[in-house]
Structures are given as structure tokens and as C-alpha cells.
Length: 203
Image (tube, rainbow, N blue to C red; front, side):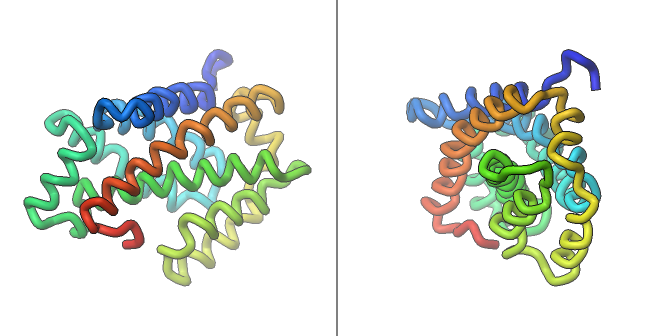
């Protein structure tokens, strides 16, 4: 990773932009900047090692789908409404289904950062386990949960993670706090899009 490459800063800046749109309530969230912001999160899963390999592969594929869709679809609202009209919302591979999976990815990172900031010491096992249990585990079968639990023993330390991300403890804390604050309204916005259309968010 290049010296000037600061993935945490890029992520928090991109999500600040999305949060500003959500908080203004004057415009719908556009799909192109949303998929771009989500693509910036992808390297984080890679940095966490084998425990989150499944999440990285799944997340990256879903983000690519949304990025491709953004060439012809303007906003998240329009995308979901098109899938509803096409009666394909819950079908594997639908943009809306992929959006729900991507939302879980950015939510998992939000909870992970929150837990890292709240946990003393150099181990990421507790923060990562809690984030996985809260966001992903309810939607995964026994085999994936077991594989993730085994992978938790191969997580990098906090110091190793920060080195991979080109951050020190102080700058990482600031960027993680920025991401937590900015991603929360974006995640809530997506949940509301689903709930207002009576789609639910637990499938």
C-alpha cells in the first residue's frame, strides 16, 4: 500500500458525502456515488484475513453489480422500484437483494469500528466476533458460522491492521469515529427504503 494511500480516510470522506445527502432530505441517494463509497470499504475485508474471506468475496461481487447498475439507474429508490415492478426483488442476483447484502457489509464495518474503539488491547478477536455475531451470523448457516469462528484465530492484531491501513492509533480513531457517524444515517436510510415498501430487511 502506497504511503499516501489512506483507505480509512477515503472511506470516511465518501460516507460523509452520502450522509450529507441523506441528512439534507432534499435529494435521493444516487447509486453511482453510493456504489463507489462501498467499493472503498472492500480492502478492509481483505485486511481482516481468512475469517472474513467469504464476506470479502460476496461483498465485492455485490458492489460490482451495483456499480454496473449505476450506469443506467440513477438512485437507490429507482433501482428498488424497478425490481418491485419486475417482480424480482427477492431473486438471487437482483440489484435490491445485492443492496441488502452490501448494506450488511457496511454495517458490519460500522459495528467493528465501534467495538475496536471500545476495546482495550491489541486483539481484534472480540470486536470482530461481536460485529459478525450482530450483523452477519443471523443470516448464515451453521457451516459458514463455524468457518468464521475458526478464522477468528487468524485475525491480524490491531497494530497489524493499522499498519496495513497506513494509520496510527490517533488518526485511525478519528477516521473510525467519522465512518461510524457517517454510515449510521446511510444504513438507516436503506432500511427505511426497504421498510417503506414492506420488503423487510431480514431476508
